[in-house]
Image 1: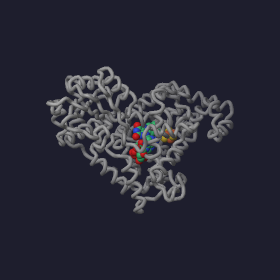
Image 2 (image 1 turned 135 degrees about the horizontal axis):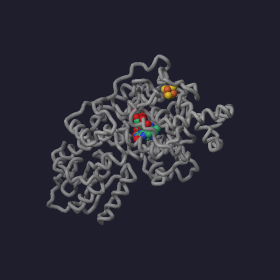
Image 3 (image 1 turned 120 degrees about the vertical axis):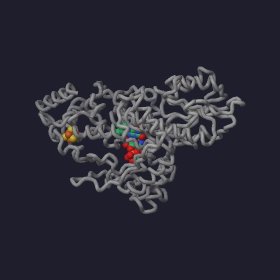
Image 4 (image 1 turned 135 degrees about the vertical axis):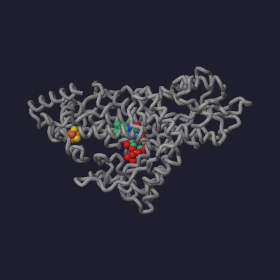
Length: 525
Ligand SMILES: Cc1cc2nc3c(=O)[nH]c(=O)nc-3n(C[C@H](O)[C@H](O)[C@H](O)COP(=O)(O)OP(=O)(O)OC[C@H]3O[C@@H](n4cnc5c(N)ncnc54)[C@H](O)[C@@H]3O)c2cc1C
Ligand code: SF4
């Protein structure tokens, strides 16, 4: 841990009035941040604070807390090495106020800066807290847009204005052209915008080919100290820290990126949607946390993938599929978040009302698919997209869990969770709480989908083909129950035609049996 962080004393040259107090939040750990542009150690001061509220307003997993705190402390160490002035408050400092507002107030009163400089945060609540703190104390706050994205929020506003409906695909194509990514003479490289037909295979019965190791880094002294701190302060939070090995510095994040590009990008597209028991990493990149903490810049990530294609190291299907996630989905959900907040948080278009089943915090369930995805989540703070969307989120959607509770769970458990990206993915894409702002239809499926895309059903107590009876798969029961409950709403959606046609084949008796089985599932949880 950096020495100054222990004492939390600034090392600013106090002979001068502080010109800029530069706020560096836990997800803004990059020296090319606009807030640090023009930083003058003679006049300016960096302010960072570890505060309890950020780990407890939703009960963050130990992995998530350690990642943020360790990365912050590593960044602080680099600041100190540059001999830049730093005011850093540690979590266990006896006079830590516990909130960003409380600590920032103290810092402003202590240093009386002319200006507070802030890169736009990743959380609407934090933005509002900082704005109101500065307003109350009468200090000038300058908010700079975050250059660690391809686009500005204003670009998304312009894109949205002319459209009745927002769809990621149109935004993505616009950005491909604008930034000339995977384009040749104005046309998409490979002659098509998307390669979904070639991608998204399952592993079949044989299972995945040998998967390369993901980048893992054993804890250094700083991380080990943070692990000890988190175990002491948050003993009851979920997460097994003996497995903590995430990149906590830019240099490590770059190594993780290189390793992905060299070893896994090639197969990324083909197996993007596949799942397999005891294989948490597969061919995904595992760089979302590094991107979200700003240890990596999305431009360098997309460039690296494009270069791998040019060098013949990865097929267009994989490189396009990967680029779509970052240039497409990542920029799209950010635009949705900042243009829809704060009302977005309150949306609940399906009027889902049930509490989150308690096994989401324990992994104690007989459903193999859920147990696998939950156990892996607690072990590493990671699950890949389809595990989040088509297992963990699928169950809560079809069960009818209040989307606010689902959001709070997803914000708690994953190392990459920051509200601007987590909320639209959870409340919108996964729970259809926004009524279709992000997704054109609810992502629902029976256990048969999970059976096709994984081996989770092999050896499971339940049978994915059965919806009623002792061995009925809860996913399948809840799938039909969802269609029954929301039939009237779904009838308005042309993309639901096939599923509703199948529903129409069920007789009255079967429908009642399914409804009773679904009720039993909810009572048992
Ligand atoms: C319910 C739910 C909650 C989610 N919560 C988060 C979250 O808190 N933080 C987060 O970064 N992602 C979230 N995602 C998106 C996605 O699941 C993760 O980005 C991805 O699983 C991270 O693993 P990876 O780095 O191996 O990604 P890869 O599969 O290798 O994808 C490459 C990169 O693309 C980006 N990406 C992929 N899908 C999305 C997406 N849907 N939205 C935005 N970016 C995307 C990520 O930066 C990711 O690192 C969520 C998805 C769902 C369905
Ligand atoms: S049978 Fe149902 S509960 Fe069991 S693993 Fe398959 S989908 Fe999940």
